[in-house]
Image (tube, helix red, strand yellow):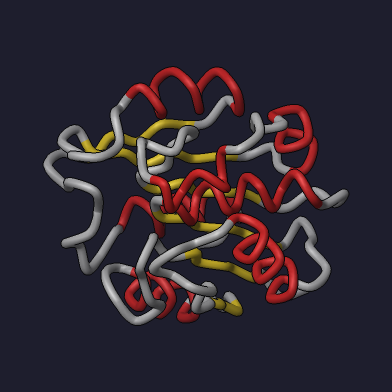
Length: 183
């Protein structure tokens, strides 16, 4: 079966910006079918719309599905994992967080606690990539929350900010390849 990857962009993002096209291209070179969907209403994201859109794009999930999220794309993937009953191959969370960070537009994603038991039941392999100077997302999400809740492997990048001025992200590529046993 073909390995599939889904790259979920940031708040107010698009598929053709930042490091998403680079990662898509690198994974396709290695035989992945890659989808970087345009999420609905990116300026004012709502959890139900984003999760339902991801469900539609993925169709039937499987152990050959890998997910890479950036910023709000991370919580979208975690919320998606709460809604399925099949194990996926792995998840990479780039600059992810578990609270609304004080932004009204993000509150719908955090209106209820994350069901970590369900998230873990549907994925057993997580990698979290954070920057040591992210102006929005504290390292404690990776070092404390994601480590304790989903036993994520943690990669701390130096001076990458919120990964929003980055055009290549080799640590994300290496993580997908490692989780999928692909060279």
